[in-house]
Length: 88
Image 1: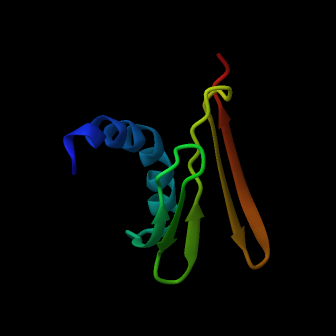
Image 2: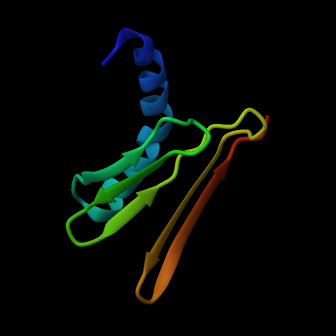
């Protein structure tokens, strides 16, 4: 990794590792990365393959939105929606 990208990478890991931890807890295994678009902080996408299903991770970075984490997981007969908001 180029030195000029290290700080941004560590910040990304610090923020979005919680999403990965939740997905790993719920599905019990490590995913394979199928695709990633990460060149624009305001519109990033990662497609993760957990073996039996596909997950779409959409991290966004915006100066006008406080911390707002949402995980929405769809099943064949329902869904789980978690929301965490930190108001400044």
